[in-house]
Length: 399
Image (cartoon, rainbow, N blue to C red; front, side):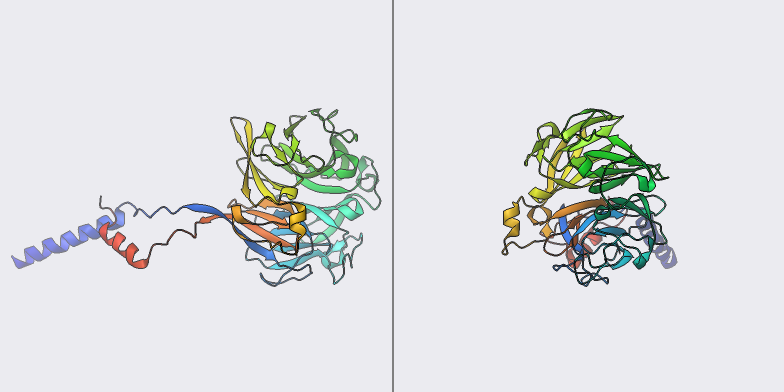
């Protein structure tokens, strides 16, 4: 009889253990999330230093982009070099060379790695094959960097001007930023020529939008006018977004038609038709097609979402400040909660596969800052004792 009772008890225990293994997951407490800003790379002084996080330094980082492996690339303008940041924040130089002085190793030289020379690189984008495309602003040309670090000049050359055509016969005038479509065509904001230029993979340059007249008007790309185009990017469906420095407009090119999304200078959130911005210096786009912009003169990161085709812009990070406030010695850049963060001179934006945003802040020493959704640190965390009690009171599989 004792053996029968023992067998029943043992069987009951096995049943409980089995139900624990096969049951539903324990309900974990849902903790609120909040956008946080942290320093990802760079420091508080202008310098040229490779190395791990906390040691490395930039001098006026401008454009930034990511590759499929999660590495980031930075156009380090004053250091005239292209820098790579691994996911742990370690920085190396993959092309060009910085020095102790501003523009110390500036030039226009093709070659591999440190043998290549740039002059004030600004925009940068990567393609699906791991190639990088760089706007070499000071040389008025577009450079290509292969995954092996070989630098060539794809289009344009020393000296500004305007000319369409292949390779070195093409001319640019103070180009700023660059975007890459799925066919590896490039689109360049040709600031001084008031045009958007297109470059085929073979290096043939044509005018994509803008007539050269410095004004803003919507319409077909052949007749629409563009004023001082600055930042540019392309969404997953091929829609091009670009900004104009004069007036702060955000504009869109879709199906060969140029339209204006954000029409006014200043600072206004809400429906884009009534919104205002002040020098959008960087554009990033997520997989859903939402558009993020660095509003430089307002020192804000803003997001444009589309609901039933209607765009709405809202501020997601930063405290609105004036250039006069940011120039004061007492002004201290700050990280932390996104809505309490102080930026200084924000430029390029990029987004990774986890939808973390990264922004190049060139003020008070160049830094790359990360904007991510994190558990709100103001919420008390569950203690080990509380969690153990919760798990004991609700075994897996029990209702």
